Length: 538
Image 1 (tube, helix red, strand yellow):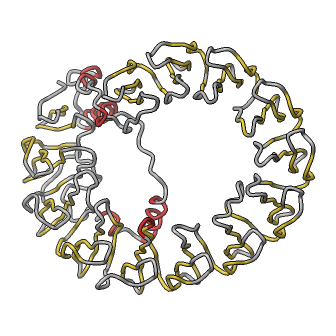
Image 2: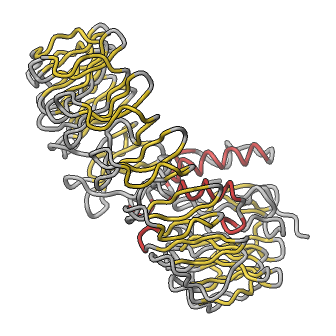
Image 3: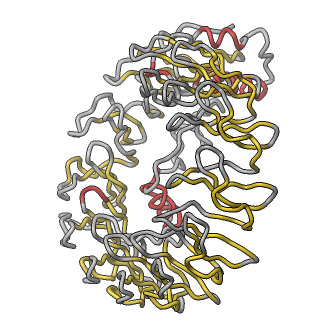
């Protein structure tokens, strides 16, 4: 077996038979985690590729006992990356008021719509432009610049937020206030927490007590409460002596301060808890839905999703409407939120899908369900086998599979049959035969998939056509790069999306391209190369 350099990006040796088969070979626990994660947009790293590569470079030099000083200097790494091509930045730049913020070698600045640097990349942090000004941080302090890069409000604040309606919240010496676009203090910088205006008033904290001020800084409601929520539908929740209730914009107590917890009003109702039980009241304080539930989701904004809210009673889940009527029986061990008109529920260890009337669209008999939200499809597991259902619950796959992954950017999902991997489309048709020992999902940027056959890796397109011969010991992912790593007979290089070797396969170790540079090892030396294979640091 080939011995692979620790420069390889994965924790296991390249091409190892023990290499994970991505989500397709995940355990039920990791599948559940992946399913949950797929519902949230992943937050991308804020570190610029050049900065990350430099840190990685130093770590690798330390790992191999190599001196880093004579091989690289941070300025040299930056010099290899100083062209502000938007495709090379870690966070994809997007224009706001004609400027896009970008990060380069740990510093931030702005480019214009052509990608040309419009404001020097020298700040520790920047916010997007709003009302013609942008908050910037330099040497730990914040101020504001205009679109020409001129500092129009001194860089002196501990924190600063973007302008909105002519005002910006700033923090100085541990206190908060508001300034206008000239830098004038409109609301004195004296409050203990950030001020958020809602319906014309902001909850203000002074010496640990809360009240409300208007946009001129005038105290409208006395600062006497232990806590105060923002106004919603004309009422605000306030806390006094451990209990909560509601006041109006004059400070009058509309709903008695007697509850343990209160949510905000939405569509005329607020979720409240008293003596450990939860229900809903109207703006007069009348109990519309009895306070009998253990919990209501989500409590803070009592979100009735198309007229329904999820509740828990005696450990069981169900849904009620705004009158308190039980629309979906409170009998399930678990119920998710509605997506595309359907909700996943669990009963006695089995899962299914219900519509808003409580009708079983997908029978509650499956061991696991993976939703394909935008298409109304479901990947389900029954008696240890996987299949694909349409939004009516009808099975559309032509056969059962041992495992099934998520649908990729190109509309194909990897499936396992008789120990081999292939791909199906969203109609359930097998587009690429299940014949590979290992298969990764299609890369969104290259629309190619890495597959393994007879112990060797190659690339295929979405029709199954071989883009490269099945000859490599390992192939990496393209991600946002035009090149990917390739290993052949223990040596490393880089190929493009056509399979052409762009950087010779001669290195003893390699890392994927991170922006415009990649770390490689040749003999005992570790250094950086660009996409032409030229050294950019010595």
